[in-house]
Length: 495
View 1 (cartoon, rainbow, N blue to C red):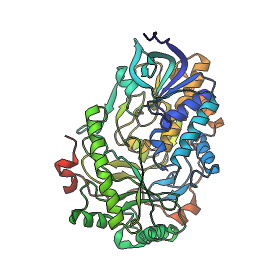
View 2: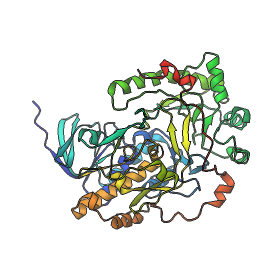
View 3: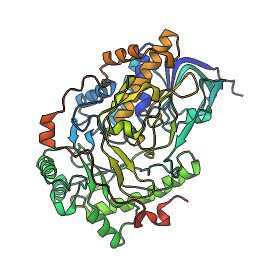
């Protein structure tokens, strides 16, 4: 008979070790807090260990994500495990990362900071007394155990700690509750880079639909294409339609979406798609995996038969987890809104920044709905759960609207949120006070010391980069794809 496991008492507990969770835990530990990080996978990194990282800069090509995320990128670059920052007129910037090198580095950095790590550990309940979140109950190989903390940071992406703790949350868009379409990404090897780049230069194939309406911008992109190790694709719709009409493709997607990675023969495919997902329902999530795995062989054959340079490509790796772009959003002391991003609002209690466009993968259609933004800040109030003490959140479950989270959800911005939340939690524990009562000026001062950007040192637009790379206008024409024929079909939806 197994003896009952002893309760664990820590100062800062981070639940979920994705992009936000890693930086939350490292920041809390570096600021002197006894920190425990729990994760249900057997590795750290979550989605950040499956994708290129988009959105370190703003549309003026100023770096808005610095501090710990930048430190991580620099370490990977020194290991020859990441590309340089590559500027992009739609995605602002991106870095291609060797997934498994990042997993190794993530554990090393967490352990060096003094973080205790518990893997293959599932959070099963939230411990709450009156208006205080006191920690969580977990299940793992050794049994069931309670973990008590002075501050618990929900980095689950799904707001699981909040939901089980009775904290207010929302999900999906206001009209119908539908969330952004999810994707199971996969990686191809064996791509012929020269043939592929030549196809991208063929304007009739239109590999970047966002850029095509702007001839000067298109010309700049074409000029830089040969020397770019990493670049984004969002187009080639004519090839997708050709395959569909020939009966070779039956996926609710109308464009080739993905990233040419820094390894010359590799391409990250972001084309699997299913609609109607409820990310909080196990049956819905399981069905989504089944549907999306079935789409991958079709898409590999599509690249082999229809995409120049893909003739000899092969399936190299499937991400170990579904890319869920939106789930529960925990309500905090402030709800970050679309207008805050578009106007580039600078909050008095700013603790992180973002500059990635509002990128909504349509809940009822194909392609994306996009709105360009100015460099914006994220207030600490959006990282503090409303109505309770002892709880923060970071990542895609922060306090934001459906539209705002379509920007804040990307990996670098999640990392910046995590650094801010972990720093706030560490400082509050050290001072023996609630996070909500932590003097903002002291928190901001510590973030400055850590090299984080909170909207104070951006300077002028990077005019040289704007000249070389080009810049999209703030307001662009809307794209088609909402409730189109491809995604109206019953098979495009989870029933």
